[in-house]
Amino acid sequence: MTWRFDLADAIGGRAEQQDRSEVFGLPGRPNDHLVVLADGMGGQQHGALAAQTVLDTARNALTGLAKRSPQQGLTDICHAAHEAIRSIGRQDGSNPASTFTALFLRGDEAYWIHVGDSRLYHFDGETQLFCTPDHTLASLLQARQGAYGVTRAGKRRNSRLYMCLGGNNELEPAFGATAIGKNDWFLLCSDGFWNQVESSEAARRVTGTPADSEKAANLVALAAQRGGPRADNVSLVLATRARRARKRAWWRP
Image (cartoon, rainbow, N blue to C red; front, side):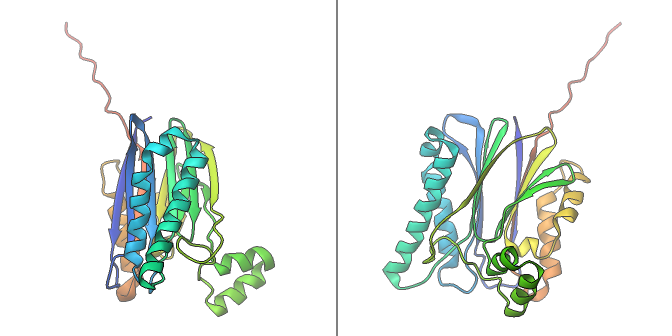
């Protein structure tokens, strides 16, 4: 199964880009890929360093991921990055933190792990099949109290995370797996994107444009424009099926 990956980001109205994303190939497995997106905490010290630490940890764990079960391998990366970021904080007295969303594509199966409020979307054409849960106080209140919880959360601005990498929280990452259909594709993004662009609109723009267009860059530019002068950092990764060129059959009389 051949994949096409499109990555794009924008600094928005912030002084520093604290989002990081990368696609890794696995040693000896040319058809396996690990996609990682991390969003360093806005306003926290060393947010960019925390996000980069997530990517560095994933890069150093690729051999182990190839040898272990997908769940164990992804969980090991998550906990190793968590401890590495906490170690940075202990060394200089800062409080770095990051989200962590990763997608592992292996053959016709997809595995994911997630901490924070960056998101992974799974689509079948324009149909959204799944979205990772946000680890925010607002989402927690909504799950416990329904619409009333959403209202209270909005008033209290509880978009704060109750779970992230590097924080003092207990780490219980969300994990999932799915078979991949022929029209399936994936979108990973930071909150700077999904706060501005609905997933249904993103799906229409991805599926309704030519394969060779700058889809990720155009979506990121749209989110940054809508965010205005105070826009958050925006990062996006698209994982779509690479279309093979059709072979022409020539006929000679």
